[in-house]
Length: 419
Image (cartoon, rainbow, N blue to C red; front, side, top):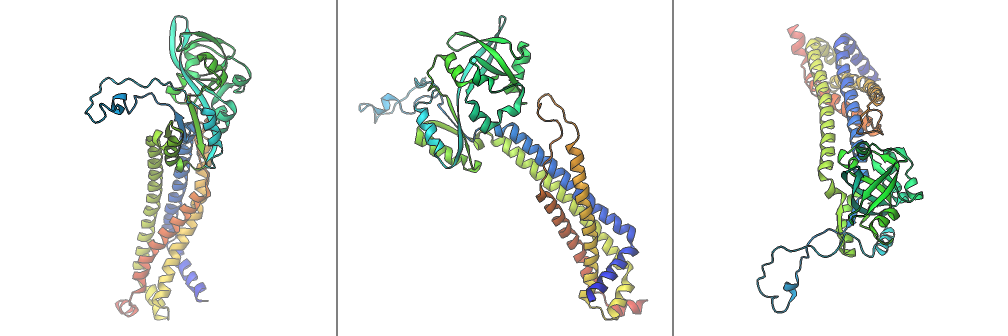
């Protein structure tokens, strides 16, 4: 019964300063709505950029790096082993980019419980010939099924069918930058010069666009068999083994372990994209910081309104205490008043936040560098709404707690005597 009376008194105080209470509630509404819209947009942006870069990057890449031998013959010679040897102009090892025993490595990786799947690749530098002009480029020989499973290659295709490069020999998918430079389209035949000096004709089966200019201007894709044929290599010729793990956080440790196990060089995704991951983390932190700041500002608004209400309602508080209400009852009145403002503003803020994200999600976003993106990226997650309403309730509770403690300590005798 006392709770109902306290609630009725809190509502009465609220109605007495209805305009100021609505302003406070609007502050909470605005804070939550902007927090949800901002964090949803920034999370969507991070996800889009992750898909653009990180999803195209293997968690672990195995390859043979061209480098000089760490141990030179003179250092293992019994005659000079203990001497001080000064070696200059060391040449790289006479070892190409090919990964030897790659079939055994791939089979072993596929049995590893940490590995989702493996995608082999053979890469070579070429020149695309257009008249007397030669355009430097790269052809990646890929396993279509594995590439599609791990990297969703079809998401970046703007024309053509990726299975054409597997079903038709001497077919190639070229980047949009190359296609624009050479003025070619699907069905056209282009000539490429291999590192061996051989000239080969390839038929354009499709055009892709990753949205990264440095890649779209030089990169192309063909089947493994086509690249091996271009280089005059056997079917076992592989230059890269791309691996995706069930847990990306295990990549650094797994890369070191497997590199030592197989005797090939390896690089993990964190090392290859450390700057990019840092940027994503910073953007997320900024989004949370701005949103929480808005809610804190709204909390200060409630605090100021309750402080003013206490000064104006000194006589009413004194009468309440004189008629039997304890200090805790008076404190409960103002905390309840603050929570009414917080709950009403918070629930309204959730609705406006959802509306804002929906509006942003439907705003056209057309750019030549991102052909697969049609609208601004938004990520809908219930946790953002939970964080928003939770922090709003905590802020409004604290905003009402301190003024309510002041109200509970008012001496009714001194107030009534002063009146």
